[in-house]
Image (cartoon, rainbow over all chains, first blue to last red; front, top):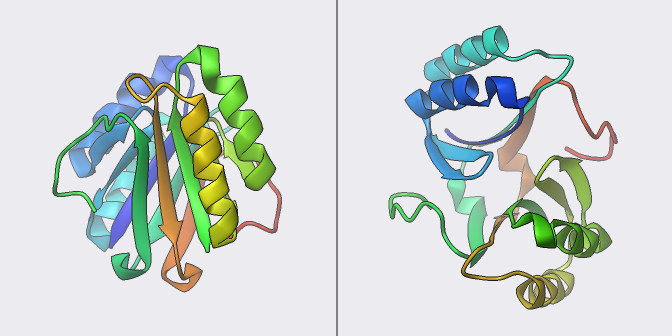
Amino acid sequence: MYIILVYDVSEKRVFKVLKIARKYITWIQNSVLEGEISKGNYEKFKVEIRKTIKPEEDSILFYIIRDLKYTSKENIGIIKNTDEKFF
Amino acid sequence: MYIILVYDVSEKRVFKVLKIARKYITWIQNSVLEGEISKGNYEKFKVEIRKTIKPEEDSILFYIIRDLKYTSKENIGIIKNTDEKFF
């Protein structure tokens, strides 16, 4: 599976959230990470995130894409992460 | 089609970009909007965005989902837009 994560987290916790997220997927743009992940790692990922954020203040959104065939990406402006391995 | 937009735009232009984006799709979370859009409106949307941003400073990312069947969404923490019509 492939996931896109967007976070809206208090500044106090941004570094921690990013540190966790980067273990699993790749930074794309401010507040956005994406990448291929196994079901097991996705579950671990969420456990770590839940332990770190304040649920009454922070918001984490996962888009889970089961089949990339039906999804494409278009960029306007600078591409902040130019790693070619991303779809 | 359904699109997710994430923006990483200089503060000077955030208001303008948001104003345009909200004509077409719906605000979900800081830096994220999403919604159903026709192909024609998506093209118009991009023209407006291109006129507004500075391509050497700003970054706009569109995820285009042709079939929502293969995509799901999961939220951790507060849900900033609770409008039920979103998938």
